[in-house]
Each structure stands twice: as structure tokens, then as C-alpha cells.
Length: 82
Image (cartoon, rainbow, N blue to C red):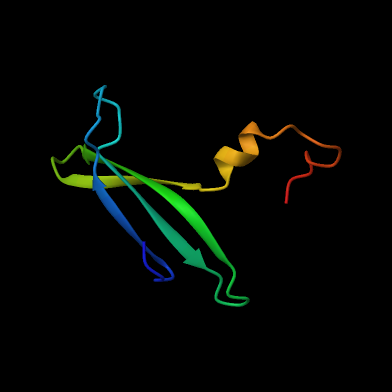
């Protein structure tokens, strides 16, 4: 992905193995307007139908660093939420 802050890109999921699996996957990034810090995000999207029949895209965002943090052992002080 290029250097485009506050943007993202999604593609149709080609390995959808269950009806509840995401329909789209992708990545994006957000830039803080105050300090310019950037965070990478994994994007997931599901095509859903509202009660009135209108179709819409439901989205989920996860930090790219979440996978690494989940596999790393906890250290003293790591359980403090920020």
C-alpha cells in the first residue's frame, strides 16, 4: 500500500469457507491530526441486508500490531490499559 494517510483498500475475500466469513479484506492506516503518528489497520467487511431490504457494508478494524502482541508473553505492567 502506498503512503496515503487516513485511507485504505479492500478486496473481495477469495477464501470464504463459511457463510459468516468476511466478504472483503484489506488494510489501511490512520494518522493522528495532532502529532502525525500513524497506525496500520487490518480491515474486514461483510455485505449485510437491513430489515427494510437495503444492502450495506459492515466493517471491522484491527491494529496490525495486535497479532504480534497476542503472541508475545506478558511482562509486569503490561496489563495496564491505556
